[in-house]
Length: 170
Image 1: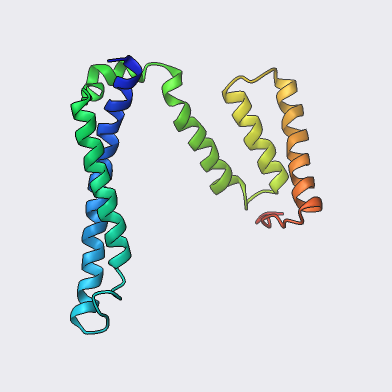
Image 2: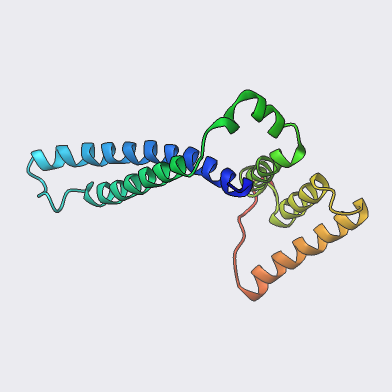
């Protein structure tokens, strides 16, 4: 089996397990939600509030089980979750890129926007992003961040007519 296909099958196993657990929980909650309404006589079987989530969750559960079985048959396993393999994987900067990107976006959305002016928040976000990934020289990073922030704010406020979040401190 090709190494790329092996990694995909390994990932299929892990994701399908998570999807099986999540859809099972959703099935339970949809049944719990519908049980009380149905037995109190407030809804019929076809009008209970949990019917659609139940059907969708059941379909997801069936698909997840199919993916899990197919991944096992194709040679997938969870050996990539062993401590030795995890240590090898997380010893490089590449492994943390998704976490860094999500962290920077979280900082931008939940800390910067709404507390400081939008153009400054965008400037800081772009600067931090480019500095983290060593995009270019410092002076170019600052110049690109300033021009991009100004262009974004100008375009969305003047051309599109978008109102930006009002700052808390200014």
